[in-house]
Image 1 (cartoon, rainbow, N blue to C red):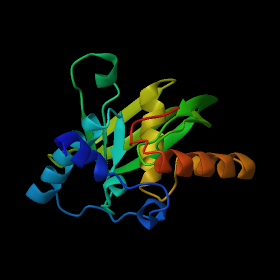
Image 2: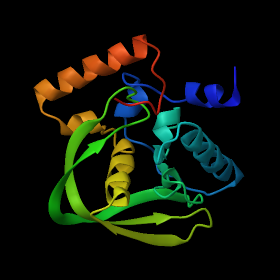
Image 3: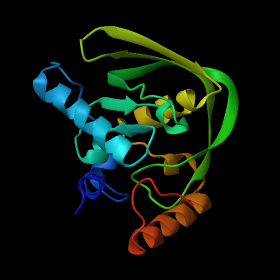
Image 4: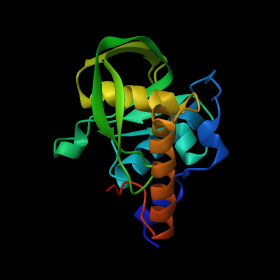
Length: 183
């Protein structure tokens, strides 16, 4: 088994209770948390994702990693957000396609506010302000922070669309579709 396959196997898939649970805040940014952040980045890059929340690798702590630049062929530009909080989510609602490493084989259209302001700590413990509007970053911040509150992209769908998407994910998993692979 390759290192990439091993990392992909760590990603928790639809149905795991950790994906539906509220995470615990991180009280101390110690070496263990820094190692977790680096490991999350490695897993995210291995899966060719642009974001990953700690629950997606089975850790119920309030941390996400994001890199919306790397996938377009530019240099890596990772962000680690510890205890992130959405301070503002407003602006014109924007519909957009979302995939999720924990829901392989599908992408779904989700409506989200176009503008978001987030406060979070970085690995040095400094409080940072992140603001994005009308971009992949705005969508990714909201998507990943949702995970910290037990909310997934499917929770934004109506009942019929949610049932259909769940069926598609179950079929994809049975077919061996891996995290990061979407329709």
